[in-house]
Length: 483
Image (tube, rainbow, N blue to C red):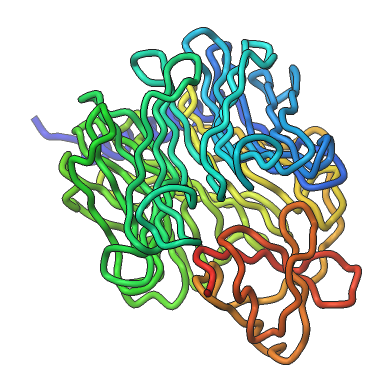
């Protein structure tokens, strides 16, 4: 019997129509949340009722410099309630997860409470966001919390960085892991690293009852900063560590155990002959040995912040791109197959800066992304709002109701390199004076265009020409400051 050569084409066409129909049936929308000042979404999770929980920080509604900002929405992104946590200092939520009792656990950083300048901040709420208890962890110096997960015993594990404890020289951080019981009482803490800068950005409990954490290290590796992967047993004792990268800056921001028992890591790299940063995806086996690596991006600087394995065995990553999109930085979503080969990419945003910090596949097969936007929302052009995007399985997003567009921000200045480990410069403006402000708007430095960021602690700062009132014109990310 003769086979029809049209049959495969017909099947492919029907499959494409089917996929398009499925995608079009999925919920698609985007929303902004916040007020006239700075508001950022750092972490998102779909909740058991089909809605979403988002955490970050707000300066628009805070009692102090900034407060932890928790937003609960329905399945269409409509706000059900919001809550604020904190005091008169800087308080920020970095990670949120729904807990087995239907409430929420939030990890972040506080300068309002605790023993030192900044301490790790853990908040447990009920299903309505009402505080059940709070805890702080750390010493007299700076300690930050970036990632939290509920553990199989009902307690919690937190990853971050500490300048209060560990083998690092004074002024340098080490990776900081904290294990608590269900009431937030400390069961153990561990620090990892060496004499230089070492951060922990993401943690997950593994199927063997231990933990895997990822971040960056200046103490070990090939040079500059390298991706730093740490595997521990259930007591936090190190089983093995791995570093990934080259002689320039390589950072890991997200780690997840994969279905084969290995790990997938997302971050960014400037090694391997790249002239600017690219999204960096690393797949390892169960002992941290590299199976493959991939980089994604163009010539404008591209950063990966969050990744997970998807139900089809591939991967999804979110971050931000200066290479593609409408202008400035845009939210950058990348979908790959199981080998890391690109299936499609999407960008979201407008001509100002828009960045994605957290992504999760949703129950309908689409994706939800949290981050910040300077392009949309009710904030002034110099301040961001929380940006929440719900896509279908092909990364298509819907339209915000109403679509509020910010006026254009002042033209962004080019800062090279950015992020940086010591100092940066503003090409063409090396002799001009600039001011740097922290996330609260407090001016922290005045510097010339050839010495941007000298002496600053790691963090995010905002750059403006000195003596102007036009607002910030560049975002500066310091990974390791000069001494």
